[in-house]
Image (cartoon, rainbow, N blue to C red; front, side, top):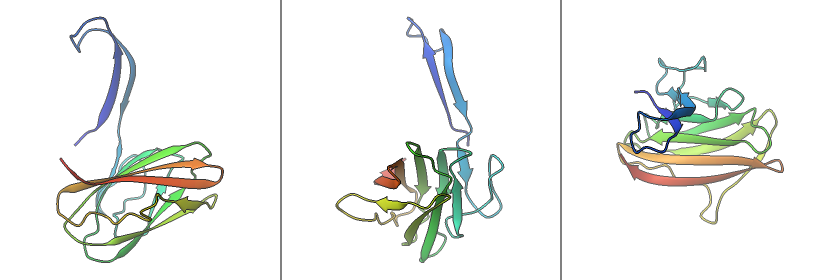
Length: 146
């Protein structure tokens, strides 16, 4: 599966006309211990997955393969940077511990606290992070249907 984004300028309703302003392909998909993308370490949510924010800012992972607790680490996130993580649920209830390294930072979540990943199979959770003042502010949309 390939993801991408194209932005065109045009006065026409025909999407094939106009000038390409931006074409971004290659969202990182890290789906299992045997698959990886863009030179990133191959991992799943089941391993101590590190998302290197210096190489990309959009990540896709499959959810935990068993009911357990997992750790996701954001590394090399810079001030003002926004990072998005899309997790496809695999049908197991699990929890995620969030960490930030290089440099270390504290996570701040909304009034509901740290979100609980969706346990229902084939649903999606979107986690968005922005680093401001040394803190990483997290927001989520859970239980999305494709």
